Image 1 (spheres, rainbow, N blue to C red):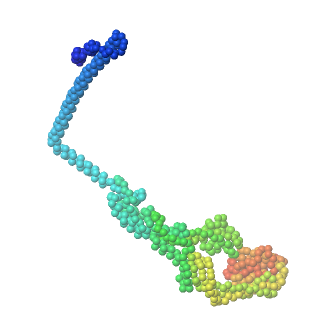
Image 2: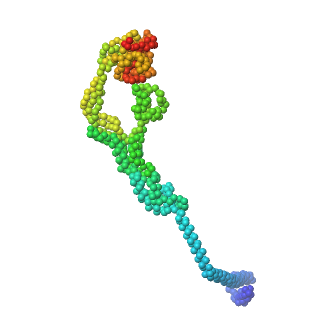
Image 3: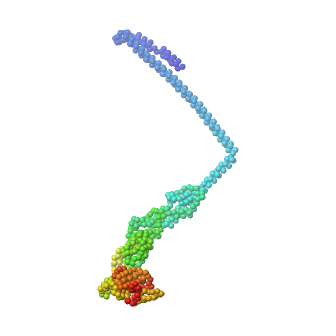
Length: 564
């Protein structure tokens, strides 16, 4: 159809315009005389060429325009046809979708109608089933609610289980009051920051009541509390419940070293250390009672000192002096043996408990003080050289002293005497030193009585057994003199005689001096007649202080009364 239209249009244009006819008409017009001077035949040929070329171009352009027009019309018709096809398809698809939706809606409505009819028919059964389900669900919910409780904890430490969280929260103020009352510290528990709750199945578990909750908190030591600490020179000594308790404790320690005495006037009472009482956040377990803190401060320190063995010391005597047991002395001195032989100058290490604080007092006191006697020496030819005889014992006097005393824990560390008044004069001790020439230190064959007192019990049978000497009864400490010169063969303990001296005088004679309280000679020493060798005592098997004196001749006892 489009092809036919193009053909008809072409014929129409040809008829209407003919380039060739127009070219022919132009040729008939008269030519300008000024045209290029060339042969007419060539000019004509060129003119005809350009005319034909222009006609051909015009013709070609017309053909192209006609073709483009025809193609545009045909394309427009095709686009319209395609669009019409799409509209047709859309209409069909819309009809299909509408049919599907309508049918589905009708089916839903029909099912709803059928359901309603069934509901009407089975209404009683459905109501009964629903009611049973509701009752069962309610019962299960109630069961879980009845066995579900709350586990409560303080800073992560589980304490117990309660039915309701409020059971714990409501009692916290009472807990704080009870703990504050018991410990004296300011205790408060914040339910938001200190307490946590966790739901738990409590079947078969103990549920705490209010009293149990209170007890659990009361006996818990890690509850935070505000206490007060006592510091000495920056070092923590004790933590107590309140500032008042800390101050009362320090006052009590000070009071321990004060004397209730009208003769003492205190110029200063205090501690040698710098003392501070400061608030201290801690747990109740770290808060000590006033009694415990007092004991720690009074006896919590350790100090070592040494003890030097003195004349006459024994292990038991040293323990008594130092107020320690033998086992404690051994612990402080490893290697110490019970059978050890003590020597003058030996030292023992003693560990003593000392206070952690130093109470310093400065007092002006008036007190009685001993005035020691002096010892005066005199010469006498009534005694041998080297002998010292006390003719008068010394006696201490007394004085009333007023002094300023500085004491640390009751011990005087500094004394400034302000006034001294003698109230009893001391008596000097008088010692007579012998100047007489010492006789030969060997036996003379004659004997003197070792103690110049009457014989108390003689030689012979006594109480069913033989008494081989004589007893010279007198007070303990009375000097015993050698009956004759000679060599000491024994100076020590001798069977039932206690401390004993035996002297060999030569010529077969020996003498024995028993029950002594002290010995002044040693074995191997040579002595002269009348030398002070021992002191009267009551050692060994003795019924009273006396000197038991024996003489032997050639190893056989003889009656001493026959010789002295």
